[in-house]
View 1: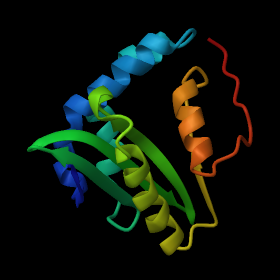
View 2: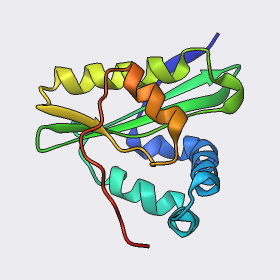
View 3: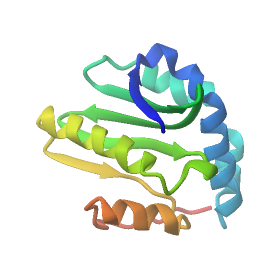
Length: 147
């Protein structure tokens, strides 16, 4: 069994290993933008989130046997919510961890009156796209980027 709980954005360092696993995964699956995933660091990514007020950011972790097995980070900007980052360890997938984490964040954003809620997914990440569709997300636009 696992437990889910929120942490203060200042404590986000506890998920660095999970975040790094997520970064490496995206680097491996990216056909055109590997360098984007190579160049970003945990500190750079989290600094933007640490500068937000507690009303604008939510960080939730999943833990089993004292080990972190997943996390979800969401933000609210101008009344719009976004699932920023979600990761569950490979061996913990299929247990409902990702669904529990993301559902908690969707409830938080809806409870704060967000006019829209979105998530950005790497084009190549078919599993994540399927996962978010099961949560009720639909494609809206496709952003194409020059390499």
